[in-house]
Length: 398
Ligand code: CTP
Image: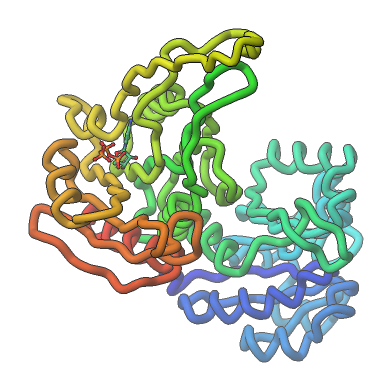
């Protein structure tokens, strides 16, 4: 997918540098050539020998190296690349980039280039959250530098929070997208995900058990194929993927409005578990016990069907509209009927009976229902279901 592309990979000095070895391997597998540059600090974390062996090219570290200058000038090095990737982008490297300093090979290359730059920040969470890093991030964004990650999670320093470098496959996806190289390059795909919360009063709500895991994985897989993704998400328990446009909503009606605002799209995937009803008599103050033991009576009103509304649009309908069917029995029959009732092109059906462990779990077993019939997919990790679905979407839009 990246055949003929050359990546100038600048490796910063952080513990996450070890993940860059895997990134290099993946880039090579995808057909890209990798020119590695390491800061002095990076060589404390991974050896130049490992980097050179995986990249299949010598590692450059020094600003003043007569041998290198005779072969290819430093400035030239940064200009023959299709993309410059900085991973891990440490707080120090980001500060240098934001200020335009050039006191070593890595920072000089970054200043001397007009090639696009993608950074994968990695640092302690307090460093990430420090106002100085915040200023540098804003400056880099204003300078047109693209960013992937960091993710929240357990960190090597023992703390927990944002600061962990994005995983190699996420960085690869961001590289593919930045190069406009995947089969979905130039396509806009809308994905809904997560549950919705329907308020009862200002502190209580009705919700469902959707974690948002499958929708998040689908958005990431579409991004990895080069799509520009708008991700409209209810209050999910898994964080949204990097490298997509995230629109956070709470209720079904907010989700419906956000979906309309995100159109037009080439394809739309409705993975959200939208509440079918909202509380029609929601209180605007916290409901209190009346002291007599009477329970309040909730009245319900039907929510707009977001999928059916988009699937039945006369003008501006996405070319491919995909719905989900979460069923506990007669999965195929219900899914086939749902496809016809909602007017969508495909239904991704799954059995969410408690015994399957699918809702909130790591795996999914789906049946894809199209106009041509039904296909049972094997039980797979949600990321693999997402990758398969994204590949099918790419085929359908080709
Ligand atoms: N959906 C939607 N808006 C709604 C309800 C559902 O966009 N208000 C979408 C979901 O995102 C999913 C599909 O419709 O893609 C199936 O939703 P589901 O709730 O399972 O279907 P229902 O129409 O509620 O059918 P049933 O009552 O048989 O479950």
